[in-house]
Length: 70
Image 1: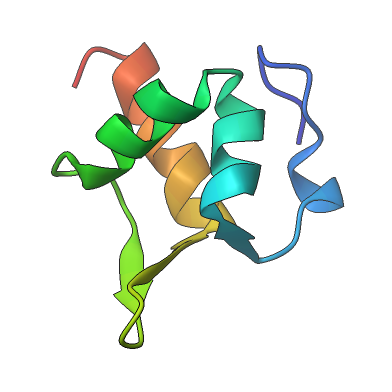
Image 2: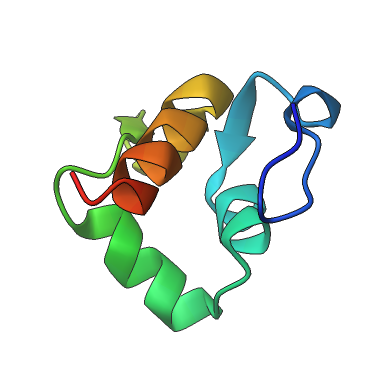
């Protein structure tokens, strides 16, 4: 599935790290981590260190909802 970001969704892993999310969105590290902390961004924090992960499909659904103005 191609999108306006010219990223083939199927080339990405099913679960993305914070760094991968930032790269997909094409934003800086600081802005990326601020976005990842803001609800309703679809991320999960895992373990004691709070490692950030997100489902590839949830990320693209979130992007599509932002495109449509929802």
